[in-house]
Length: 131
Length: 135
Image (cartoon, rainbow over all chains, first blue to last red):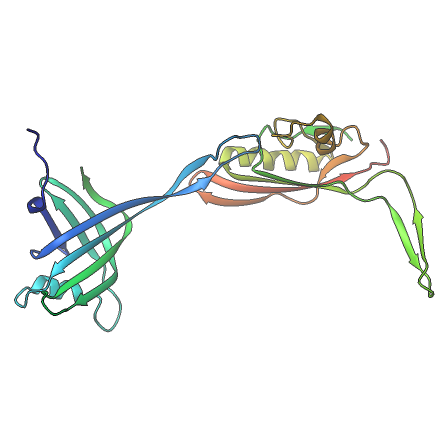
């Protein structure tokens, strides 16, 4: 039976710190298109334009976990937001890019553990991609 | 005034107006309109061509054509493989080419070149159909 990657294989690092309490993460690539359709064509012609990367992570908020405090402290602060390397791992595979935190939320609700939802957008191209 | 062929690049969009008939209008104080018609041939037709995201090498061909045409005060000719691309009616194509109408295409201004991506540009060319005195 072929091996598959499972949730237990997933890891998320931000600014070199492992976010050990991450409950899920996603990473997404998107490519803008340039129209190159000419008169006389029967179908739209496209060119690949600039690409971009975004990611999200949901992290359970433990009191003694400094790594999540460091992450959230980059955006819940006075002054400028500080970009840092975001690294998404699953098994021996990884995607890494210099990330700007574009949104962050801390949610607390009765009957649930406190958690943080963080979204990232890449500044520039991927640093590393092993797929 | 010799004519030069426009490069074989198909436009993304084309806008054509057939021009006007030369005339002058006078309106009297009582509102009556007098029209002095100077000729029965159209003049000043216009053609606008947009080439979206073409190769930089194709943009260069268009600029070269503009320079070659204007440095010699030439005119431009079009074919179904460039400005007339996508036209299925021969009569309509003749209007775009303006070859059997007595008009000649000249650049109304320099091409506008906008760089859109690495190696790609969008070029807009404006032409005016003139009735040359020596034709």
